[in-house]
Length: 326
Ligand SMILES: [Fe+2]
Ligand SMILES: [Fe+2]
Ligand SMILES: [Fe+2]
Image (cartoon, rainbow, N blue to C red; front, top):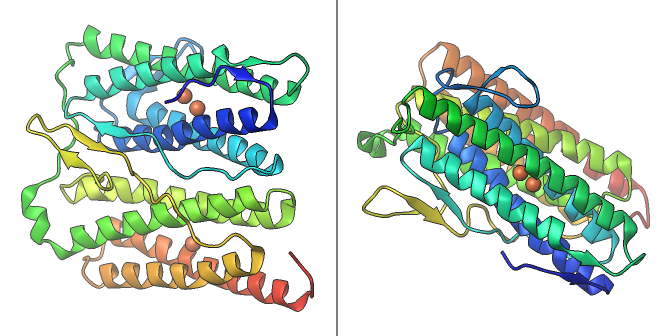
């Protein structure tokens, strides 16, 4: 992460916000990849602010969601300032041991707190941005303290060597597991396409709120699918990751850096086939999965996809009815 210190021009401000955005995209993934690899309901810590026992996995997911909100804040302001929000991301790592992931997450929080708090703004130049950056930085301070408390709790119960879920090699031959991985990638891709358009069309609440709802639905599906993968004896895959001999996975592109289209009509047009394609993947998977809780959950996701197609078709038709709508 490049450290941007002196903010004098609009260009400097956009640069700082984009460096921060690339970081926020990366951590939003990294924390979710980590959390979805942790055992559910097993590790707890005493939260220093909530003053209550919280689950490590659930709170790591919550922190990941905070980072998505940071991304949206930064992207919308970059867009308002006439800049182009970046969809490049910093690198992402997953270690086999839970503790090593928490340690990395804590260090990442401290690094970004420093980026935000050490930025020096020319007096009176961008007061609202300066204020936003400071506000975000204290979310990061909170996150750092949470990761410290999680590690303290793990050490106290002798769980330093507790491991993340691992992918089972036999699953390479299982069509349903491979299909679910493909669905995970598609859910992730669609979530970020919606988020891009939320950012681009953030000047008007009607469209951006509707697109945001769909982005959240895809995020929730991603979350549920992460749990289903564990039940199938696998774990969320990190896109484009290489695994070294110690089992450490690294990627510099955990999500696509380019999402198609910049204007309202073509953005809306491109979402419909993407939604339909995702539904066909789910339908194929449903034909392979026996009746039961997993199938019920996958049917919910498929139903939601059909609702998205309905909504998106009307968003497009209604936009086409109005001449000159941009
Ligand atoms: Fe953040
Ligand atoms: Fe954070
Ligand atoms: Fe959808």
